[in-house]
Amino acid sequence: MRIVNIHHRRIAASAAQLTPLLLTLGSAEDRVWPHENWPRMKLDRPLQTGSAGGHGPIRYCVSICEPAQRIRFEFQRGSQGFHEITLAGEGTSCLLTHTIDTRPTLKFLIAWHLSIRFMHDALIEDLFDKLQAQFEPLPQPSRWINYVKFCGQWPAWQRNDAQQPIDGFNNKTQIAQITASKVNRMKCSPTASTAPQGSQIAARLPGAYFHDAWVIQAAEPKLDALEQFLRVARKTPAWIDRLMALRNRIVALFGLKNLGSIAQIDPNKKATDYQAGDHVGIFTLFSSSANEVLLGDSDKHLRVVVSVHKQADAAHQTATITVTTVVHIHNWLGRLYMVPVTPAHRVIARSMVSAIGKEC
View 1 (tube, one colour):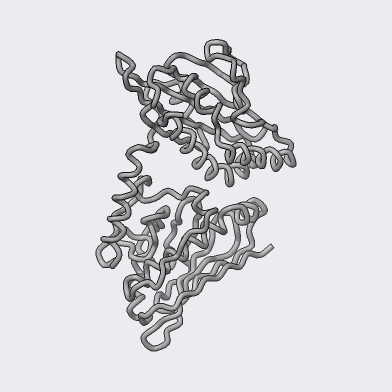
View 2 (view 1 turned 120 degrees about the horizontal axis):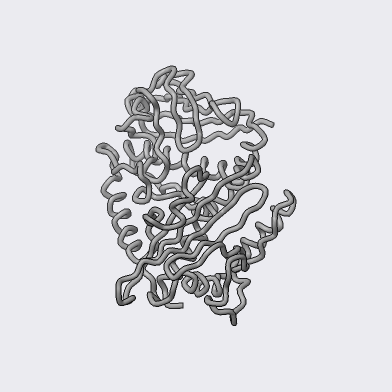
């Protein structure tokens, strides 16, 4: 099956004016790619025929480099085809077109329809916005659809490869102001982190296909690690349980487990009554101590382990809670499963960790 995806934008600039900007693609001085909100495009050399690189997991090489007319990138993984930027100049304006034309593998095709397509559409419109803003005021900046927001694309201040807006981008002051306001709001929200040093979960990181960690100050610092989890899980928002129900219906088609819901916890069972091997919502309890609890599940496609780690002061007046998730996949089904689950996990994990820092 073939995928063809086309975006157009007319910009008040000639091809001669756009060419120097396009030549910065994939470089440290990139003035085209919207790296403020998306994983940066990186090439192994200046833009030219034969340059290789990609963005995120998408890999490609430059097969045609005529910046005043066409730049084509041939896919190197997951599909046979290309994506390209073409310019059609008309006096002082230029029609910019981005095209994907490819015959993907089955796994890539499924991933495309589940999530990649929506991310791609948002990214290209952001790219057009960035180019257009360097020559004329934007009538109205492109907006992400709710599904793209749900998929949790990381903003600039959460990415290791984030860069400040570059000189020449007319909206850099506005971006800096928006970023600063969002950072201030994040002070009372979960913060991206790493697995705590010396924790049990840190020993499970080698070979992981996916892992993340979120840290927050606990609203109830005297509760131990398992109590922190139970406190939040018992009041799981209904929308999360609805997502779990949808997940369970879909994975049943592939013969995977029905995990139930996160909130399926006995309200009368105390944390001290739980033993290794007991079910705690959708998870199985692996181990529990005052400062760290390990929960998880294993199926034919992957194994996931979640750690709730507590670090408190001597008087237990304040406590930092770090929730770490580590996933090891077993096969191609695990990779396919993680395509929609990864963005959903980011949203759910942040919501659950946020609740640890709130008075419930």
